[in-house]
Length: 167
Image: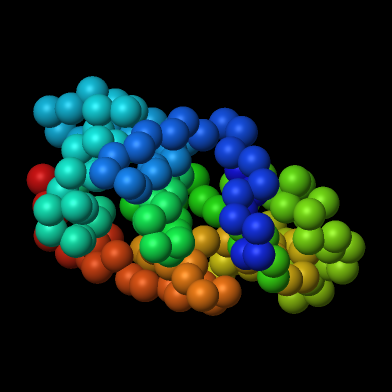
């Protein structure tokens, strides 16, 4: 999936679409709520609760997934599972779930030197950075609202790992 900050969706390959009361929901991966079938049925349950309360029920959604909510007013909400098994890559002009495809659209060819040093010294890249300058990872603790050519990061308020279990 590639989302352009100026042109909306360029492609939604690998994502399923569910429409509910003028909203479009795009999901990829395994998404489920307790008592619902994984996939479409669970996405519809999320849509119903979101429409009724105006709040996304992050703590009730399980699985390894990416979910995008396109509101009729043009606002777009992006988020992934709470366990960080999936992520979005966010560049200056595009958002996507495929790192190499995003590099192609962003026309990025500059290494993030700090991330490169982390990789060689520590064996990984941390704190949302990627090896390419200008592209970062989404956080599992946040959701992202795209509106009026800006992206706002908002906490999901799902609690830390040491918080009491919700189950």
